[in-house]
Length: 291
Figure 1 (cartoon, rainbow, N blue to C red):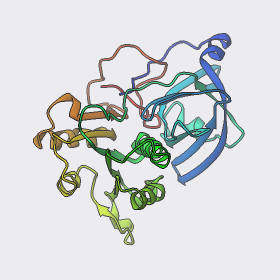
Figure 2 (tube, helix red, strand yellow; figure 1 turned 90 degrees about the vertical axis):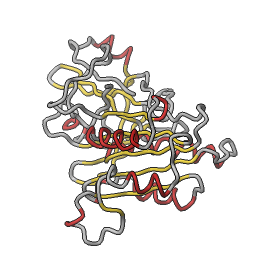
Figure 3 (cartoon, rainbow, N blue to C red; figure 1 turned 180 degrees about the horizontal axis):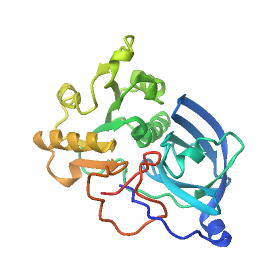
Figure 4 (spheres, rainbow, N blue to C red; figure 1 turned 30 degrees about the horizontal axis):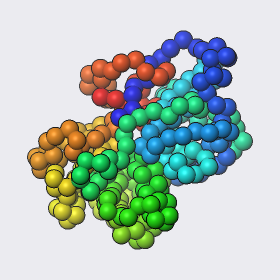
């Protein structure tokens, strides 16, 4: 799980340059009016593990505004990729939304996060459930295993099953890539589902929220507590509902469910965590939060 960031006073230039790379945007792709991808070159070595996040920052009104974002890319790639959702009232995503190739962005030199693929506890099935930008760490998982599979370093004994939920079809930023992986890879299955299909009569996939189809596919894929770890990433309601469903299916021990809460609704108590990076508990770009 990644950690909630809390605001701190502006850091001076020396501290900033010690902690952050002056990274540069190399590529941008827009999936819709409020969803986009950026690829960033750190200009130096940046080692991370799939499932971790990086802290990005921009200067605004004399202050450095940082926020954490899950990494989409694999560690084997030369650049770091991110999937953003615009939050108009957010502190950072409106600024990130303006960035174009060639623009500079600060990136903290050290990645963080513990939302990692667990291949050591004896369960070989990995059920991945997400909403919109919550797909980011799962794309990193699959890209990494795909590379290792091509190189003969992964034997396919671990199976990944991804349920990807969104309101509308254009919110699936990585559907084409993941569908291709589903066709090519014997150890990966991908299902996309939309909760607002009435505006998209040509939608060929599943209908409903990700948690709506969870029971169906858990049965179809024969995913049981003794052979499966569940990973939940994205909308807090999806996570809460999916946890309840999984617990009724017998997923009771802590090792069987991992979750990455992307924000905490204002009606719920704020999570109790130790102080971490700089930032805040707002829904800015669906930044990760630790419960």
